[in-house]
Length: 222
Image (cartoon, rainbow, N blue to C red):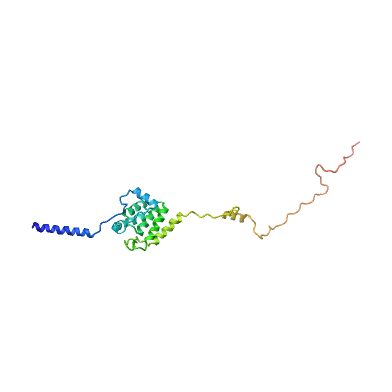
């Protein structure tokens, strides 16, 4: 009886070991144990952070739904740390790094990750081919649209060149004020009765003091 029990236990152990051997061990990225502050500093610089494919696939499948939720919520630091520690590299995970970098204000780093995402799209490592987890996004279009936004923010504003001595163009308000105050071309002069001339002075009227005519005084009485 003891021999039968021992044989049964050996069979059960062999079955468990066979099952474990058939299932690949879940792996994470090379930076899985790195400090959070270090990971965010590397992200800010746009450094290569993902380099694991098939060995990290199971780990990525486990955390990808959480990454999608963090992306929607705009929790950029948590998104970056989660993706980097998983270590899995495809167009979706690189897109998430671009989103996290852009959310943290690192436009140059975001543009770099978006370009890397577009580079992987269409290869055997793309999310549509290997993991089949693309979060409802279409690549490389999704990364291309984000890349255009990042490059637009990085480009300096264009200034119009004005040769020396060229007067500045009047603003719209100045032009409107000038048009209001200036008379319209071809307008008619104001109409109405002409002002009447002043009447001539009456004869014999007293002349003002200081006149040059001499007036003889009346004769003295006797």
